[in-house]
Length: 239
Image (cartoon, rainbow, N blue to C red):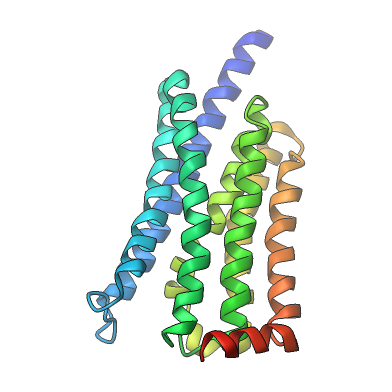
């Protein structure tokens, strides 16, 4: 097999893998929210309008990421790049909506009962900022496909957090709930790491940044949630 043929085979394999990861993320999110909606105590229809908009926009990102990977597999690179501008704008909207929805949840006393207000505030804000950091780093490195696709994957894994919070037995996990969510997200990164190791013999450094960002987010949640400034802000928002 020539070097060119080997490279073509690796490119096709990579594209198929990232599409499979996009599909796995989409299925996880769909199942997570389906489980939540199936629970009798879920009052989805009664949720405020901004919650529905938030859910729709974040779900759109998952669909967008899936479509972008499907376009790459098909070889529609020009369309993939053209849609990238839409994705950048969508990511900005997601950050604004994420922060707004978190603040309004505290103001309207709609914080999930298994999350102390400080944990909920830090978790949601740091998660959406980590998503933004990884995603915009990926956009900045869009001319380097190896970095771009891996950072985009790690950023999109961050969007799974609310769905994982619905899949995992959060009331039973107590203070370890956010750790369980972060650990589950790291399993998706691990799958990508193992793929790199198996196909390339080494792991791309982008995953160190992605995994590091997820770990740093969790450490921020653990370290900041019960500090006096965060508790005071959460209390002020709750009135």
